[in-house]
Length: 341
Image 1 (cartoon, helix red, strand yellow):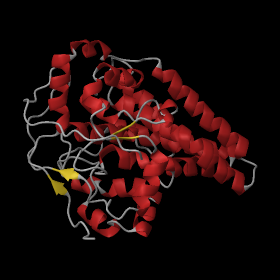
Image 2 (cartoon, helix red, strand yellow):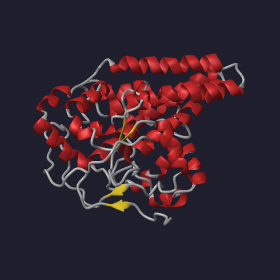
Image 3 (cartoon, one colour):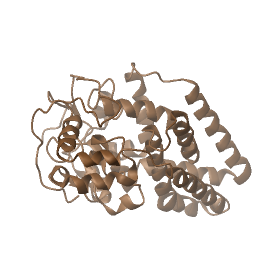
Image 4 (cartoon, helix red, strand yellow):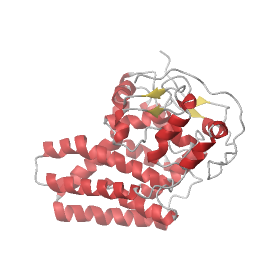
């Protein structure tokens, strides 16, 4: 089998703005789903409290219990907190941008590493310039993809230390301002929170939170979410949704095509998009199991870090309100069968 040595280059525009315009033309009622969900703040507070209570409960337990609790419970809570940070990045809680930033910082606290503010600025660029290597932080560095490629051990290491690979990508994204006062506040809050956990609960409580963070984004079936979203697992379709049971505890984050098509619709209304326009989403390939995808990624040599679509043409800068898409109707969607994994 020939090993892929570069990304898949496309001359087509990214598919989401085109599909948004098509869907709104056929189903204009979807506009009513656009809005805020301020009740999401209670999910944030509940998840933060859940992690703090768990940290307190394991502070005097054996290391096996600490590790097990982090893998089986803490990872799921932290993963959901990432989804909450994602909602805040899209300003889907409150009308005031500052309120969303503060909510994101609160959601970030149990995750130890400051990431909420930086995630917002890089993630919004990912939506605006999907596949543009110098602006899309979701794409691996070329040296990163060459190093890991399609090797089993390499993929293990990549998932285990996934947050660090993302940090290495920052130097590539020279057009994005990496630091400001909000980022400084994010750092200060994380330092104070971490210090408080260590002083009040001790080292094992802190280790529980640290392990929960790494498991939630890495060597865990939940880590397959990063593969699910944009890695080419079926032809050259760029974005995939996940319609599995874990959406129930992950705030519908699996509805990724729907989210990219309508990023101003909050998590609780994403399933309504698919229900309203099934002909657009049921004809796309999708995943039903993060666990199966996790193992497929590790063992399938046809999937490597180069299994991503990139493009050089930035196209038009999209409007902030996707109810006014600026994309032209060009090309056709690729219709394919749902994936079983």
